[in-house]
Structures are given as structure tokens and as C-alpha cells.
Image (tube, rainbow over all chains, first blue to last red; front, side, top):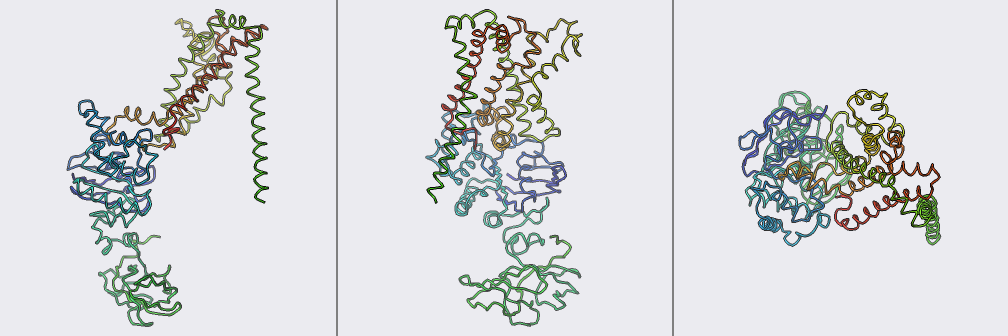
Amino acid sequence: MSIAVDNVVKRFGNFAALNGVSLEAKPGEFLALLGPSGSGKTTLLRIMAGLEFPDSGSVLFEGRDVTGLGVRDRRIGFVFQHYALFPHMNVADNVAFGLTVKRRRERPKRDEIRRRAQELLELVQLGPLGKRYPAQLSGGQRQRVALARALAVDPKLLLLDEPFGALDAKVRKELRRWLRDLHDRMGLTSVFVTHDQEEALELADRVVVMDHGLIEQVAGPQIIYDEPATAFVYDFVGDSNRIPVTVDGGRVLFAGEALDVAVEPAPDGPALLYFRPHDAALVDEGSAGALPMQICQAIHLGGATRIEGNIPGVDPLIDVRIPGRDVPPAGRAAGLKLLRARLFPAAGEES
Amino acid sequence: MAAGRTSEGRIARAALLSVAMVFLALFLLLPLVSVFVEALKGGVGVYVESVTQPDAIAAIKLTLLVAAIAVPVNVAFGLAAAWAIAKFDFPGKSILITFIDLPFSVSPVVSGLIYVLLFGAQGWFGEWLAANDVDIIFAVPGIVLATIFVTFPFVARELIPLMTEQGRGDEEAAVSLGASGWQAFWHVTLPNIRWGLLYGVLLCNARAMGEFGAVSVVSGHIRGRTNTMPLHVEILYNEYNFAAAFAVASLLALLALLTLVLKSALEWRYGYHGKGGGH
């Protein structure tokens, strides 16, 4: 099932949570909403679910306008950040809840409900734990119960709010792969919220990067990482370094010297040059077209060397990763040649 | 060093414990025991006679009636108010919370006087009520109203912090799974708050049965008609009929003990899962 939001605006008092957001998830797609806290990603998800309502704009399920429908009538599966399992019900009853509250005419027989709940528990690999209570489960198990419960009503759309946020790193990685697999097998359309870029890049077909209630970029993980559309996306996704430069007639100037780096054409004036730690190489001090850098610290990390360097006039320290085992001594002056970088106008820069 | 510290801790613990115990015995246990001792001083015969006397029976009936009306009303109100405050944001929320506390901060006598001022013969609605033959002051409706006023914070106060802490998540989950508002309340909210609610009900009930000040002002002390148990105790006491006064008082004390036992028993029986409704 496809879901689209069109020009959605949502304010909480004076705080603008969403400033006109449009987005579409295609049938079968796995979409990640990625952004820092306060970027509006959770609000957007809750509006898709019908847990919040937009001040203006609309929500469409397969082209049908569902903006006015509440969560009860949208027939979606929603997995809450802290699972929201019912503490007084055992696991099987939790999973069966969506079936037991159906109107009498649509409600399956008691045995059928029990069988279906057991099936779902098998699906999430918790078959023998039906009689346990949520308090007796680990975080990862609770997460899977929450998922089974959401799937019980046979939703075509699955919405997940920080689904792995409360889990430790190892469980998180396992569950990620398992969730992606489940999504593919059941033919769901899924949207999940995360502030963890690694999670978004690994799991999603497309990543929606948000900031300040606006969408900064929507693209596949590879493109988000390699071709960030804005300075914010570059900064937020992956490690990066930032150098203030001046653009003059297509040349990139740092401290009056032209840098030897291929970038997209940009208008004249102050700009910011971004590059990834692994997109630079050490060259001799004073090499033409390289940044002057003093090595502050160099650490060998099996197969690569991590160098922290100081470039005059640039704050904070530059972080680069150089292949090979040669660890240059701290304090040495060197040149830094950029292999790949992106240029953004300085006006878009805030903090 | 370590040994010194633990023995110090032991002494401090023993001291604190004995202070608490002595205090408890002196201010709670002793009066409670004395009520029963005094009540039975004249023998079982006098005791039985005192509590089965027609005026006493009438007072007991009236007290139970008042509690039977006031408690359900305040459960409904308390649930509604706590629900609204905990689960929704609306203008005037803090004012509502303040108002809920009002009966706690106002002397019960004043609460009673408010009703006399409103519904008494010289009160705002007094003339209209007299013309339409409605008795409120010096009659059962006045007693019920005053009791409701005095006891209305108990359920709400017990539930507001509990429901605020629990938040909206569970209800949202229930509704997202297709539950109606009523189903979400019945299957999710109520089980989550049952212990707090029960505790509020018991406190509310104890106060409804024991309320003296406000009820005293509006009741008019008509024997056999508008005397509740506490008022009846006072009348007997003022008539130097100590044995009878303490006999009726012991019934009140028994009711209080019964509610406590009931609460403990229920907690013990059902308290294993989701204690206090916590997550």
C-alpha cells in the first residue's frame, strides 16, 4: 500500500513541528525518517498513523484521503518506542488484543484467535513465551511482542517509532536484519523513525533526512552518503570535516591559496567545503593545492591510520583516515590533499 | 572502621524504628483500643442495645446511604478529572487541579456553611427552594452534597499522578489496534490504575462515613432523620452517655479497619502482576 503526505503543517503552540512536508512511500518500500530530536520526524510518523492531526495538508493511503480518520480507522500497524505492551496481560493476550476488540461480527472465534496469536508468536520466534508477562521479558523480546501485536490486525502499512532505540547494540543489529526480512516476506510498506544514521542507511530503501520540520533530502542510502543535498545532510550523516573557503570565479580559495579539488560549480562568495575523513591524502608540506595542516595526533587502527590535524583558522580539529601503516609523528607539518569534497553556500550554515 | 559503621547503622535503625513504633502506639493504637474498651465497659448487653437503638440504626442507615451516593459520584468525577488532566492538554488545566484541592484546603465547617449560604432559608436559592417545596439544608440532600464536596479530591488526587506517569502510550496502542475508546478504557486504562483507584475509593469511603464538620453544619441534628453516625456519637457524648457514644464510635472504627483489611486482602490476592499498574 502506498502512503503519501502532502504539504503537511503542524504546530504545537509556538513550536512549528512540521513546516510543509510532502513525501510518498511506494508499495513495498521501507522508508526511514532520519533526523535529530526536534526535527519533526516522530510528529510526521504520528500524523501518518492518525495519532496526531495536521493543521493543514493531507494524508493519502493509495490516493484515498484519510486525513480526517483517527488511528482506529486507518488500519495500520504501529510499534511504539517503548513498546506500550499492556502490563496486566500475558504475551499471548497482548498479541491477540487487536483481534479480541474487533466488533462481534468480524471477530474470529476464541480458538481461532488463540491459534492466530500463537502463529504470530512463532513468526517473531517467541512461540513458547505466550504465558509470560511483559515484565518477564528482555527488551528485544518485548520489541518482538510489540511487533507481533501490531501485525495481528493484518496491516498493510507498518509504522515504527524508534523501534530499536531502547535496545543494546548487539540485539539492535540482530533485530534490524530480522525486521527487514519480515518486511520483505510479508509484503509490507514500512516507515520507521530513527536518529541513528547507521540504522537508517543499513535498513531502508530510501532515507528521508529531516531538520527543523522540513525534509532536507529523500534518497537511497548510497546517495545520501555520497551526494548529500545540503550541508546539514552532509554534517548529520557520516563523519565529516568542514573548511570555510571562498569561491572566486570557479576556484576554491583557502587563505588566499587555490585548492586543487573537483567540486560542483558554485556562486562566488564565502562557502563551506565538506569532505569525509577517508577522502583525503597526506602530501608534503607546502604542496600546491593542498591544505596546510599540522599533525596533532596519529593513531594506527589496523589497516588505516587516523590523524587529527590542526589547520590554521579552522575549528575544530580535522579528522582524516589514511590507508596504510605509516604513522607520521605528531607535531609534523604536512599538506592535506582532498580527493573528493562538496561545496555548500555559507548562508545555509547556522551553528 | 567498617564494623563501627555497621553497629552505628544498627543503633540508628533501632532508634528510628522504636520512635516510629512508640509514636504509632501512642497516637493510633491506644485511642483505637480505648474506643473498644470504653464501648464494652458496660458489658455486651449495653453495647448491643446502644447500637440497635432506633436512632442509632437510623444514623447507621443514613451514613451508609450518604457514602453509597457520594463515593460513586466521586469515583466518576475523579476518573473523569484525572483522565482529562493526565491525558490531555487544555487551557485552564492548572486551575482545575487547584480547584480539585480546594476541599482539602478549606475547613469542613466552611464547606458546610457554603451550602447553607446557597440553599438555606436565607440563602441565594432559599426562597425558590421553599416555594418549590425542596428540602436541602437540614435534610438528606444537604448532607449528601456536603459529603461529596468534602470527599471529592480523594479519587482524583490518587489517580492524577498515576495516570500522568503512565502517559497516553497504552491507550494509543489499544486504539491503534482497533479498540474503541470504551474498550481502551475498560481493557487497558482501568487495569493499569486499579490499585490507585481502589485506594482512592477506600479513602473516599472512609472520609464519607466519618465526615463531621461539614455535615454537622447542614444536618440540623434531627434525631432519627438527619443524624449520621459521627453526629450521633457527638449527641450521645454530650448527653454523658459514654458507653453508647463509644459503642457507635466503635462501629465507625470497625468500618475503617474493615476497609483497610479489604484493601490489603485484595492487594495480596491480585497484587502479583503489574503491581500498582506500573510498567
